[in-house]
Length: 286
Image 1 (tube, rainbow, N blue to C red):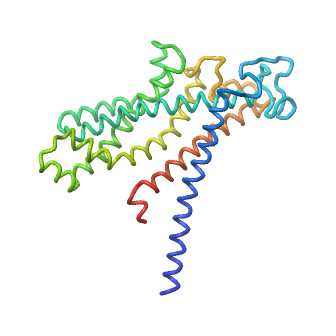
Image 2: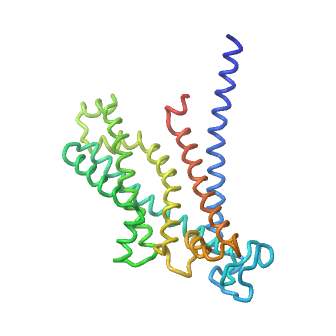
Protein backbone atom coordinates (compact mmCIF):
# COMPACT_ATOMS: atom_id res chain seq x y z
CA UNK A 1 0.00 0.00 0.00
CA UNK A 2 2.83 2.39 0.88
CA UNK A 3 4.57 1.58 -2.40
CA UNK A 4 1.38 2.34 -4.34
CA UNK A 5 0.92 5.62 -2.47
CA UNK A 6 4.51 6.76 -3.12
CA UNK A 7 4.17 5.84 -6.80
CA UNK A 8 0.95 7.86 -7.07
CA UNK A 9 2.58 10.86 -5.37
CA UNK A 10 5.59 10.66 -7.68
CA UNK A 11 3.31 10.44 -10.71
CA UNK A 12 1.33 13.44 -9.51
CA UNK A 13 4.51 15.46 -9.06
CA UNK A 14 5.71 14.55 -12.55
CA UNK A 15 2.32 15.59 -13.95
CA UNK A 16 2.44 18.97 -12.18
CA UNK A 17 6.03 19.45 -13.37
CA UNK A 18 5.01 18.77 -16.98
CA UNK A 19 2.25 21.39 -16.68
CA UNK A 20 4.75 23.96 -15.43
CA UNK A 21 7.10 23.07 -18.27
CA UNK A 22 4.30 23.79 -20.76
CA UNK A 23 3.74 27.23 -19.29
CA UNK A 24 7.42 28.16 -19.04
CA UNK A 25 8.30 26.78 -22.47
CA UNK A 26 5.35 28.44 -24.16
CA UNK A 27 6.05 31.76 -22.46
CA UNK A 28 9.74 31.54 -23.41
CA UNK A 29 8.96 30.85 -27.08
CA UNK A 30 6.39 33.63 -27.36
CA UNK A 31 8.58 36.02 -25.38
CA UNK A 32 11.48 35.38 -27.78
CA UNK A 33 9.25 35.91 -30.82
CA UNK A 34 7.81 39.14 -29.40
CA UNK A 35 11.35 40.38 -28.71
CA UNK A 36 12.36 39.58 -32.30
CA UNK A 37 9.24 41.32 -33.62
CA UNK A 38 9.95 44.46 -31.59
CA UNK A 39 13.62 44.41 -32.55
CA UNK A 40 12.67 44.29 -36.23
CA UNK A 41 10.98 47.67 -35.86
CA UNK A 42 14.31 49.36 -35.14
CA UNK A 43 16.92 46.99 -36.61
CA UNK A 44 17.33 44.17 -39.12
CA UNK A 45 20.61 42.97 -40.68
CA UNK A 46 19.51 44.49 -44.00
CA UNK A 47 16.37 46.35 -45.10
CA UNK A 48 13.81 43.55 -45.65
CA UNK A 49 12.72 44.95 -49.04
CA UNK A 50 16.25 45.63 -50.34
CA UNK A 51 16.89 43.68 -53.56
CA UNK A 52 20.36 42.54 -54.56
CA UNK A 53 19.86 40.49 -57.72
CA UNK A 54 23.55 39.69 -57.95
CA UNK A 55 23.23 37.77 -54.65
CA UNK A 56 19.95 35.99 -55.39
CA UNK A 57 19.29 32.46 -54.08
CA UNK A 58 22.40 32.38 -51.95
CA UNK A 59 22.27 29.52 -49.38
CA UNK A 60 22.54 30.14 -45.62
CA UNK A 61 25.94 31.47 -44.51
CA UNK A 62 27.00 32.10 -48.13
CA UNK A 63 25.46 35.58 -48.01
CA UNK A 64 23.88 36.52 -44.72
CA UNK A 65 23.06 34.14 -41.90
CA UNK A 66 20.04 32.53 -43.60
CA UNK A 67 20.77 33.24 -47.24
CA UNK A 68 18.76 35.23 -49.78
CA UNK A 69 15.60 34.78 -51.86
CA UNK A 70 15.00 35.00 -55.61
CA UNK A 71 15.37 38.79 -55.52
CA UNK A 72 18.47 38.82 -53.35
CA UNK A 73 16.59 39.94 -50.25
CA UNK A 74 18.01 38.87 -46.90
CA UNK A 75 15.90 35.98 -45.56
CA UNK A 76 16.73 36.67 -41.90
CA UNK A 77 15.60 40.29 -42.24
CA UNK A 78 12.38 39.18 -43.94
CA UNK A 79 11.69 36.61 -41.21
CA UNK A 80 12.20 39.23 -38.50
CA UNK A 81 9.92 41.77 -40.21
CA UNK A 82 7.41 39.02 -40.99
CA UNK A 83 7.35 38.10 -37.30
CA UNK A 84 6.08 41.58 -36.44
CA UNK A 85 3.53 41.59 -39.26
CA UNK A 86 2.18 38.13 -38.47
CA UNK A 87 2.03 38.62 -34.69
CA UNK A 88 0.51 42.09 -34.89
CA UNK A 89 -2.27 40.95 -37.24
CA UNK A 90 -3.01 37.82 -35.18
CA UNK A 91 -3.00 39.57 -31.80
CA UNK A 92 -5.08 42.53 -33.03
CA UNK A 93 -7.69 40.29 -34.62
CA UNK A 94 -7.99 38.03 -31.55
CA UNK A 95 -8.28 41.04 -29.21
CA UNK A 96 -11.02 42.60 -31.36
CA UNK A 97 -12.89 39.37 -32.03
CA UNK A 98 -12.44 38.15 -28.46
CA UNK A 99 -13.69 41.40 -26.94
CA UNK A 100 -16.79 41.58 -29.15
CA UNK A 101 -17.52 37.87 -28.78
CA UNK A 102 -17.12 37.96 -25.00
CA UNK A 103 -19.43 40.96 -24.70
CA UNK A 104 -22.02 39.18 -26.82
CA UNK A 105 -21.72 35.95 -24.81
CA UNK A 106 -21.99 37.65 -21.42
CA UNK A 107 -24.96 39.69 -22.63
CA UNK A 108 -26.73 36.60 -23.95
CA UNK A 109 -26.19 34.78 -20.65
CA UNK A 110 -27.72 37.72 -18.77
CA UNK A 111 -30.66 38.39 -21.12
CA UNK A 112 -31.37 34.80 -22.31
CA UNK A 113 -34.52 34.15 -24.35
CA UNK A 114 -34.70 35.26 -28.01
CA UNK A 115 -31.42 37.18 -27.82
CA UNK A 116 -29.51 34.03 -26.88
CA UNK A 117 -31.18 32.08 -29.68
CA UNK A 118 -30.48 34.81 -32.22
CA UNK A 119 -26.81 34.97 -31.18
CA UNK A 120 -26.39 31.23 -31.59
CA UNK A 121 -27.96 31.29 -35.07
CA UNK A 122 -25.65 34.15 -36.10
CA UNK A 123 -22.71 32.13 -34.82
CA UNK A 124 -23.85 29.17 -36.92
CA UNK A 125 -23.97 31.36 -40.03
CA UNK A 126 -20.49 32.78 -39.42
CA UNK A 127 -19.07 29.31 -38.75
CA UNK A 128 -20.40 28.27 -42.16
CA UNK A 129 -18.05 30.83 -43.78
CA UNK A 130 -14.36 29.97 -43.21
CA UNK A 131 -11.94 32.87 -42.61
CA UNK A 132 -10.40 32.41 -46.06
CA UNK A 133 -13.78 32.83 -47.76
CA UNK A 134 -14.62 35.80 -45.53
CA UNK A 135 -11.34 37.44 -46.51
CA UNK A 136 -12.05 36.89 -50.20
CA UNK A 137 -15.39 38.64 -49.84
CA UNK A 138 -13.90 41.47 -47.78
CA UNK A 139 -11.07 41.76 -50.27
CA UNK A 140 -13.57 42.52 -53.02
CA UNK A 141 -14.59 45.65 -51.06
CA UNK A 142 -11.44 46.60 -49.16
CA UNK A 143 -8.67 45.17 -51.31
CA UNK A 144 -5.87 42.96 -49.97
CA UNK A 145 -4.05 44.36 -46.97
CA UNK A 146 -3.62 44.37 -43.20
CA UNK A 147 -7.18 45.60 -42.59
CA UNK A 148 -8.66 42.79 -44.67
CA UNK A 149 -6.69 40.13 -42.80
CA UNK A 150 -7.57 41.56 -39.37
CA UNK A 151 -11.26 41.91 -40.25
CA UNK A 152 -11.50 38.38 -41.68
CA UNK A 153 -9.87 36.74 -38.65
CA UNK A 154 -11.75 38.92 -36.14
CA UNK A 155 -15.13 38.12 -37.71
CA UNK A 156 -14.38 34.42 -37.36
CA UNK A 157 -13.22 34.85 -33.74
CA UNK A 158 -16.40 36.61 -32.58
CA UNK A 159 -18.65 33.51 -32.61
CA UNK A 160 -15.84 31.34 -31.20
CA UNK A 161 -15.51 33.55 -28.13
CA UNK A 162 -19.28 34.13 -27.94
CA UNK A 163 -19.96 30.41 -27.60
CA UNK A 164 -17.24 29.84 -25.01
CA UNK A 165 -18.20 32.91 -22.99
CA UNK A 166 -21.90 32.06 -23.09
CA UNK A 167 -21.28 28.52 -21.83
CA UNK A 168 -19.03 29.62 -18.97
CA UNK A 169 -21.26 32.59 -18.09
CA UNK A 170 -24.33 30.34 -17.85
CA UNK A 171 -22.44 28.16 -15.38
CA UNK A 172 -21.58 31.25 -13.33
CA UNK A 173 -25.22 32.37 -13.31
CA UNK A 174 -26.17 29.08 -11.63
CA UNK A 175 -23.77 29.66 -8.70
CA UNK A 176 -24.88 30.60 -5.20
CA UNK A 177 -23.05 33.95 -5.21
CA UNK A 178 -25.10 35.07 -8.22
CA UNK A 179 -28.30 33.91 -6.52
CA UNK A 180 -27.35 35.94 -3.47
CA UNK A 181 -26.57 38.99 -5.59
CA UNK A 182 -29.95 38.74 -7.29
CA UNK A 183 -31.67 38.35 -3.92
CA UNK A 184 -30.36 41.68 -2.68
CA UNK A 185 -31.63 43.46 -5.79
CA UNK A 186 -28.57 43.78 -8.05
CA UNK A 187 -29.37 44.33 -11.71
CA UNK A 188 -28.31 41.89 -14.41
CA UNK A 189 -25.71 44.37 -15.65
CA UNK A 190 -24.22 44.75 -12.18
CA UNK A 191 -24.15 40.99 -11.65
CA UNK A 192 -22.52 40.45 -15.05
CA UNK A 193 -19.77 42.99 -14.39
CA UNK A 194 -19.12 42.38 -10.68
CA UNK A 195 -19.73 38.66 -10.28
CA UNK A 196 -19.86 36.81 -13.61
CA UNK A 197 -17.05 38.46 -15.57
CA UNK A 198 -14.37 38.23 -12.82
CA UNK A 199 -15.10 34.50 -12.45
CA UNK A 200 -14.85 33.66 -16.17
CA UNK A 201 -12.12 36.08 -17.30
CA UNK A 202 -9.39 33.48 -16.72
CA UNK A 203 -11.10 31.04 -19.10
CA UNK A 204 -11.44 33.79 -21.72
CA UNK A 205 -7.72 34.56 -21.42
CA UNK A 206 -6.78 30.89 -21.78
CA UNK A 207 -9.02 30.52 -24.81
CA UNK A 208 -7.54 33.66 -26.32
CA UNK A 209 -3.99 32.31 -25.99
CA UNK A 210 -4.98 29.11 -27.77
CA UNK A 211 -6.87 30.99 -30.49
CA UNK A 212 -3.76 33.06 -31.22
CA UNK A 213 -2.17 29.94 -32.68
CA UNK A 214 -5.14 29.49 -35.00
CA UNK A 215 -4.97 33.18 -35.92
CA UNK A 216 -1.30 32.80 -36.92
CA UNK A 217 -2.20 29.88 -39.19
CA UNK A 218 -5.11 31.80 -40.70
CA UNK A 219 -2.99 34.89 -41.33
CA UNK A 220 -0.36 32.73 -43.02
CA UNK A 221 -3.05 31.18 -45.21
CA UNK A 222 -4.42 34.58 -46.18
CA UNK A 223 -0.95 35.86 -47.04
CA UNK A 224 -0.28 32.68 -49.01
CA UNK A 225 -3.34 33.46 -51.14
CA UNK A 226 -2.33 37.11 -51.55
CA UNK A 227 -5.03 38.44 -49.22
CA UNK A 228 -2.69 39.57 -46.46
CA UNK A 229 -0.40 42.57 -46.33
CA UNK A 230 0.52 43.99 -49.71
CA UNK A 231 4.11 43.65 -51.00
CA UNK A 232 6.82 44.55 -50.31
CA UNK A 233 5.90 44.10 -46.61
CA UNK A 234 7.09 40.56 -45.78
CA UNK A 235 4.88 37.96 -44.13
CA UNK A 236 5.61 34.32 -43.44
CA UNK A 237 2.67 33.14 -45.55
CA UNK A 238 3.75 35.07 -48.65
CA UNK A 239 7.34 33.86 -48.17
CA UNK A 240 5.97 30.33 -48.41
CA UNK A 241 3.96 31.21 -51.50
CA UNK A 242 6.99 32.78 -53.21
CA UNK A 243 9.14 29.75 -52.34
CA UNK A 244 6.96 27.27 -54.25
CA UNK A 245 8.80 27.81 -57.52
CA UNK A 246 12.21 27.29 -55.90
CA UNK A 247 11.62 24.25 -53.68
CA UNK A 248 14.20 22.10 -55.49
CA UNK A 249 16.72 24.87 -56.00
CA UNK A 250 16.40 26.74 -52.67
CA UNK A 251 14.45 24.64 -50.13
CA UNK A 252 15.43 26.94 -47.24
CA UNK A 253 13.05 29.57 -48.62
CA UNK A 254 10.12 27.33 -47.65
CA UNK A 255 11.63 25.54 -44.65
CA UNK A 256 12.52 28.64 -42.64
CA UNK A 257 9.13 30.46 -42.71
CA UNK A 258 7.40 27.11 -42.25
CA UNK A 259 9.44 26.47 -39.11
CA UNK A 260 8.67 30.00 -37.88
CA UNK A 261 4.92 29.41 -38.26
CA UNK A 262 5.10 25.97 -36.61
CA UNK A 263 7.17 27.30 -33.69
CA UNK A 264 4.78 30.20 -33.11
CA UNK A 265 1.70 27.97 -33.13
CA UNK A 266 3.44 25.51 -30.80
CA UNK A 267 4.38 28.33 -28.44
CA UNK A 268 0.84 29.70 -28.23
CA UNK A 269 -0.64 26.22 -27.72
CA UNK A 270 1.83 25.43 -24.93
CA UNK A 271 1.19 28.83 -23.36
CA UNK A 272 -2.56 28.27 -23.53
CA UNK A 273 -2.27 24.83 -21.93
CA UNK A 274 -0.02 26.20 -19.21
CA UNK A 275 -2.35 29.11 -18.48
CA UNK A 276 -5.31 26.73 -18.31
CA UNK A 277 -3.51 24.58 -15.75
CA UNK A 278 -2.53 27.69 -13.78
CA UNK A 279 -5.80 29.63 -13.88
CA UNK A 280 -8.45 26.88 -13.97
CA UNK A 281 -9.12 25.81 -10.36
CA UNK A 282 -10.37 22.41 -11.53
CA UNK A 283 -7.03 21.72 -13.20
CA UNK A 284 -5.02 23.17 -10.34
CA UNK A 285 -6.71 20.82 -7.83
CA UNK A 286 -5.72 17.69 -9.74
